[in-house]
Length: 111
View 1 (cartoon, one colour):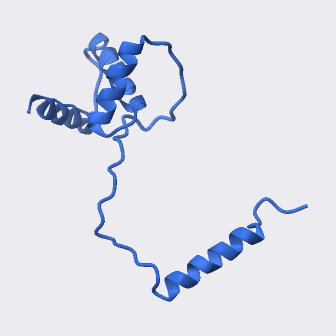
View 2: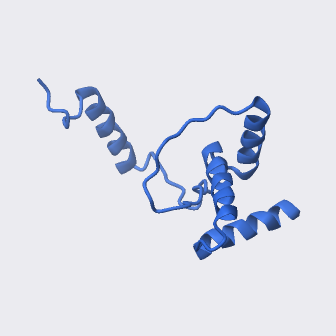
């Protein structure tokens, strides 16, 4: 029985092949190439998965907003939920970074 930490022979051969290609200079890395921006973290708390049924029109609005902003639909839903919660808790403290992102989003939407 193989130890789960062992690399299968095929993967090891492919890894050695790739390492040899890099060592020979056959593979180049462009460190100046653009990289996708990660979505902002709204909280340092662990995330949990929930599910909800929404009308198709609501899903389309979520998807379109996410596509326009280049984020996952879950980011949009999470932000909308946070905004609703913030409206109900006016004395709740918010992080400055979250506030700045919200203002930047409003400025982008107004442009």
